[in-house]
Image (cartoon, rainbow, N blue to C red; front, side, top):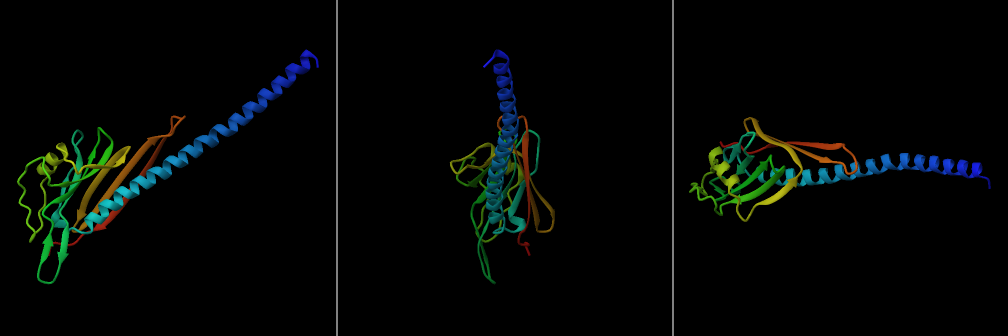
Length: 198
């Protein structure tokens, strides 16, 4: 084999190698992107389903909202109905709270009480309590042993009450695809109708 033939063979092998790499790299990126999207979908669905389950056990008067603020957490506090009959309702003497911490990009769930903080909220089993935004902010800023992270890589989280007993949840997750500069974004929305207070 001559030197020219050897150079031509090396060039052909190099071109074939480049073609294979150009084919495999996008395929690997697409595979990673699909895996990340599926994983985000699963995490987001678990978080929203957990919140919906708690909201379905509440009335509009037992849901307190901590509205969005650039530096502070956003969230809700839910006092759930334990049992109901024609004559009476029995409410939990505590709350389930969901908080989104923008600087940490995470969504958490915790129960209150236990303390901290010691707020002295007047929970009463015979009527629901709506936790004020100020009290929710104190709970969010002093986590207790019940806090658990429901989702990471959270880009945005909002809970709104557009009217009567409707509560809308929006959760946006965002993650960088490995070996690329692409951001994969997933937005989940749910609308929940809770009990009226009347």
